[in-house]
Image (cartoon, rainbow, N blue to C red):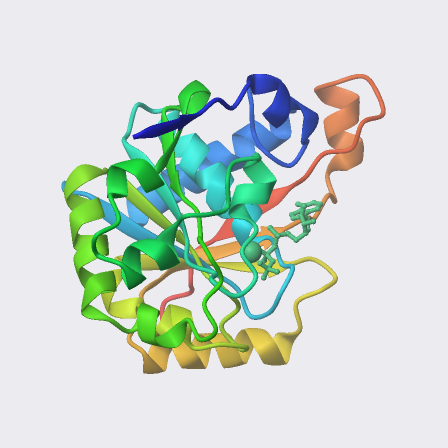
Length: 248
Ligand SMILES: Nc1ncnc2c1ncn2[C@@H]1O[C@H](COP(=O)(O)OP(=O)(O)OP(=O)(O)O)[C@@H](O)[C@H]1O
Ligand SMILES: [Mg+2]
């Protein structure tokens, strides 16, 4: 397995990725997300979790990476797979190679997984980048190779976290819904539209996808309280909320 040395300074330099130095509220928010996801998927055995949202830029990749880091902090074996083979961002966010990756593994079964999966030493976390961007990712997503790959990853890891492209724009996440134990749906403060959220839920229900809950991303309404009681200073922080889907 190739090692990508990710120094903690890289994570520290990005306030959006959690590290020991992240602000209290952010670390607590991710602990709470991790706990809620675990409670929503009870039982032993490895879990495959999808991270989805209605449209672009709502925080899926950021939250997928942080959820992975958060699980790895509890000594779980974790891999993050960038399943957005159209506009992948996981590799650039954590400063690793973007190729070869998932597309190469799926297109060429001769490729060695051990050479393509990258290990982040500091976090005990593995990442499968998206790889070379294929002209049409759909046949790769909807393939036996994909089914076999996810099954193999579930044998090797406690948590397989899939970062997907937006649900209302492409069907990739829904094509793969049978491989996923449950999805976390990201909606973003001042950005996600009600109609798109509603469309997302309908599509997920149609595909029989299990919604684990919603993360309300980038809301900082308790900032004053936080600054007053927990920390002096003026740096900003990011607030995530986890909501369970209401019972029907
Ligand atoms: N809580 C937050 N506060 C501030 N900025 C954020 C927050 N979450 C994400 N961002 C920023 O918003 C942008 C979009 O985030 P991200 O790439 O994680 O979204 P995405 O849903 O994966 O987008 P895409 O669908 O294009 O892949 C990035 O620049 C990211 O750094
Ligand atoms: Mg993304």
